[in-house]
Image (cartoon, rainbow, N blue to C red):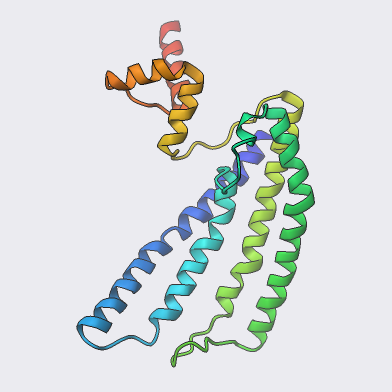
Amino acid sequence: MQRVLLGIDRLSTLVGQAFAWCIVGLTFVVTYEVVARYAFRAPTTWAYDATYMLYGALFMMAGAYALSRNGHVRGDFLYRMMPPRRQATLDLVLYILFFFPAIFAFMVAGWHFFEESWRQNERSMFSPTGPVIWPFKFLIPLVGLLLLLQGMVEVVRCIRCIREGTWPPRLSDVEEMDQLILAQAEERGAEALAADVARGAEITPPAEAARRERAADQQDGR
């Protein structure tokens, strides 16, 4: 089961990281438009359409990736103080009551939205060139499907946490420094962490620290 969960995590990661390259295209388009408009008095007819399509694709297709990393914004000033079983129970209720109904509605409405656009061969009305936009609208039901798969994974994690009392592992990823500091302060104590930082010690992510500890144990065993 854990292999299936991490496999869907990897799919969400692959899609999210692939579409993250949209930010490079978005940067190029905006820079080109600004230089062309203000330096050469020759604004483009396609930059506006390109920018909102690239940003929309980036924003939507990273949704499942953010969910796989538990990275969506939440009001967690109370949530973080709850024991894991209570956190999982609250998450499970919210997924069932709000997440899945919203995602199903999003997928159905998004598919009809795309289908109508495709039948009309819809083009943008915001520029003279009028690029075709129905392929961009196909991303709406697609991202709904990816969020649905990732949501199912999160529900399984909630159920396992309720049974076992601890959250199952996720794929490791880049973590914010403040999260690392809070995690290590809780584990080792704020005063000990402050003393280590003052000595120039490295702040190591918990997953990396556990990996190093296992490697050291294996070397000692040899």
